Length: 512
Figure 1 (cartoon, one colour):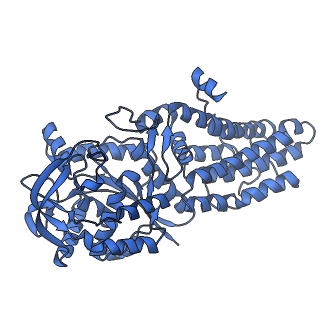
Figure 2 (cartoon, rainbow, N blue to C red; figure 1 turned 120 degrees about the vertical axis):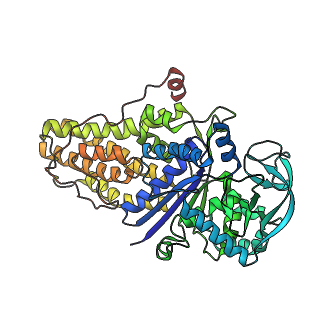
Figure 3 (cartoon, rainbow, N blue to C red; figure 1 turned 60 degrees about the vertical axis):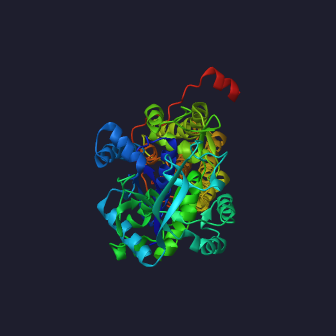
């Protein structure tokens, strides 16, 4: 049995979950479900980042202790993941005792090796990012993330000799083309590494910030939030605590991240692992942003799309489907309510929903609600069987290549081919002259649909399981062979799986 370990970033506990958080987590969930249903053993880690200056300030403004603030804020993420059908194996919080102990142990190890030193530093500091920036990293002399001028701070701190590992990191990236994906992001990191890499400030004096993990070698300082947060990927699977568990899962198969945290994950994190003597993850995959009207979503622009608003209106699984179908991994994608409605109506209500309705109605009306016997195959049935028999291999190969949208489209094209098969052979007319032949058509349409639904199950786990019951089937393994649907299987009660969304007049005209 193969193992598959996948992670999301740990999300900033002060944030309110938005479509960006939801996308990364749903993607991780979909990938983990595909691997589970293919027979792999899976560990899926997500969680929250709970230390730092912004958390301390937010807690102070609310008049509560930082830990109490985190305990109350984290529930928003935990509840949202439940609503979105996320099945993670562990939800890590950087305030967890086990995590803090791992951070201290690794810090002490790196300190003892001589890769952490004490020095005075003057730098440009962004409170929003909780990090120092070099001048070359700025955009128009402002923070590239927050577009705000930075404050110059001078203080003594502990530094990690990140520059020591610059050439080793360059060599590793060049020797392992799958390490940073997509290729555009790998090139971006290599471009960044063409300039001398400075050392990394890894502490904050308690006189300025007390909310953090205390350095094991100096009680007057706490750990810099990124050095704390990144170590969740190893602490979450037992690093320094459970060697057997850690050896089982590490290295991670995928760190899924947004492109805005590329440097921290593809420069800071690998150099930290080099210093700690821990192998590198297999792949760090940086996806693009979801945009709204071609602008990155942000609180300041007031264009943040909240997952709860979408799922309350349209349901969870259609939202999951849209996010997987409409973003090309690695590129940005634009979200609009009209775009969602058009995709939903075209793929789910029309192609998939109408097919389910046709099969269910005809089987109920003419075969007592039981799947009919398949008779001798014609050329049309043979083509449908051949395509269905290779569909899983094609879709899974695309998923392994991180071409999720192409994998979904491959499955949906098969669904459309089932519709064309039905239109050509017209079992609703054939039933009048040759009931057995009509039964053969309906069996092959239903079994083909079962195969497609099984491949869509990791994306829409609740709706597809329900639809499978409507055609007398149930969830099976991902690569189930042709013929799993047995004649005589009783259909469960039918209900429209994807009611159409009424488009506004402007959208109708644009479509036309």
